[in-house]
Length: 195
Image 1 (tube, rainbow, N blue to C red):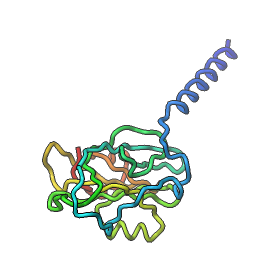
Image 2 (image 1 turned 120 degrees about the vertical axis):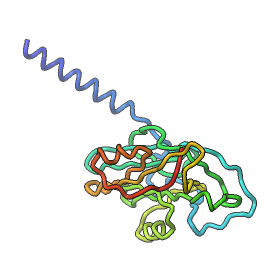
Image 3 (image 1 turned 135 degrees about the vertical axis):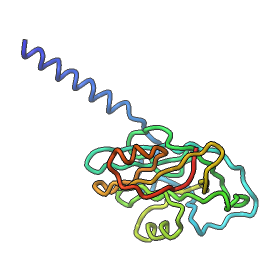
Image 4 (image 1 turned 90 degrees about the vertical axis):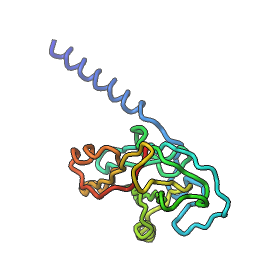
């Protein structure tokens, strides 16, 4: 009887393990970060045409890779960012465009996505000094479109909070302030306003 219970527990554990490993969403980025894209990076210094392009609202997905070096990464529908691990869902929705022309800079900042060289962290920033500091320290710019983030409230937007986990060197970006606080993460401020 005891042997049967043990076998049932082992079988259950095996089935659950198989389900967990096969239920994770896979992303189209299966190659090394250095060779994974052929897109043109957008930096704070990128010059674009003076002709405005269409502004499209895009979902930004959050991914999570757990384990000893847990990390959250983020990727837009059009491919800016980096997907590592299991997709957790839509983190937020925000406008994007191919050019910076026509963007009301009194209402919007541009959001830059940067990936740690060893895939240990992912940062979103609106600060060009932080962008260049990280880039000059080997971080990879994974921003391929202009990602707009509102400077203030309006149009049904909510704050996008930035948290940091010093134990894992991981940043968390969330619309839910309690999520970061309840996880014991260090609050770093509001990045902007998103849907």
